[in-house]
Image (cartoon, rainbow, N blue to C red; front, side, top):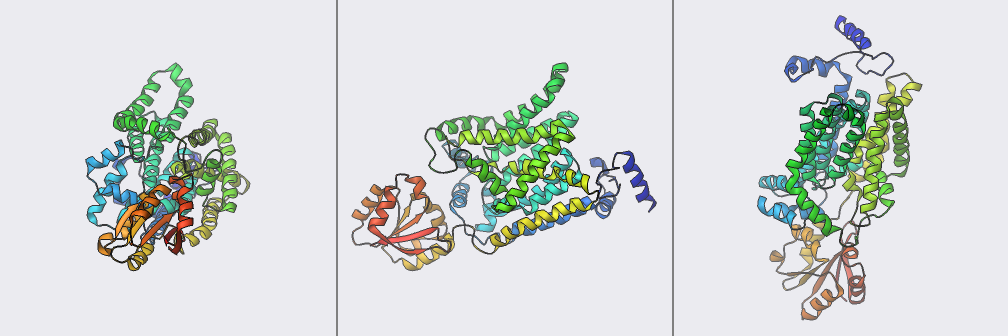
Length: 510
């Protein structure tokens, strides 16, 4: 009891008076790595409400990310992950250098995972694990940016975010990118406070790992560096040494990313050489990103965006630099995405790192409510509200298919086809998820691919008396934007089946 009282007195001296402190003044004995002992850890876990809450959130996060991890079959992009990951390390790099629009790091890690087996859970294990580990990182970001209350609220938002849960259960690199961007952000915030060379170097290392995970991480990294230049401009003018630290961090990033930067420039020219045939263009990328990060629920989106705006205003009241941080990263990301949306396919999942800023802004808004109701219940109330507004979306997500059911469709196709039949994938690249589950060798069928009406006509005219099955998805609109292939199918085939989600269609000659 005496120790707790002393903790309260110490807390008052350090400025806890008038602020929300869930721990009632308790201070952790762990200040450096040398303080990490079993006794100190036990004391922290038993006495700190923040750590207890974070542990609970992380456990919930484990359940939400690993529950039914293998329920959905692989869809096109995940099947593409498998197709690339089975190649050798050198071949994976060659695929990237030859035009694959994703860096190789995630594929390299998946290549190692495939040594343990080959199924949906194995392929999705790393994103799910990193999705869990990102929860405490959001706490640390909130703590570094404002305080531990903001950290807990940001961690809670991360825990129950349908957007982040979905990509934690997808065999793609988005969660890996977010994980490394979150780590880079933590050390960036630390570096801005301390000016420590080691913090800047760690920022550079994790920024590079984020970039090696997904090309679009560069936008967040560039925004952070620009913020540092703006924030440190007065100090740089008076003391050049401050700039050297920032340059060191950027230098580490460039050094570690140099091979990929060269490839990125080449791929950027290739990808922007023609107008995109899919994705979201213009202002739609802004509204759709807010919608998806909020959980694809209009009520949740309006509430969370309102809290985000309140948080930005509150951040400016606390310190102009905090408000600038939130606004600069958000605006710069959207401006760049808006411009690029007319040059290359743009989707909200590329902007997954904005969830850091979005949830951080929401977390900061708690200060407004705490100023009105001076009670710890405000922080817990935020956590409860985040759980409540996410619950309906998550209930729907876990109650049925959220991806194309290639597993079920392929099983039905396997039973329908007989030796000598021809199976045509339309467009041709959807053979990747089909072939993950359907074996033409076992069924003794011939597989072909088609994209245009001319392709379909040629296959039809050369098929003789063989029965032809056409496997078609909505991707045909992106692959053949003129619509000629769709028209050919309408005129020459009839629908004979779909998958459980009615996203994959099976046609045969009419």
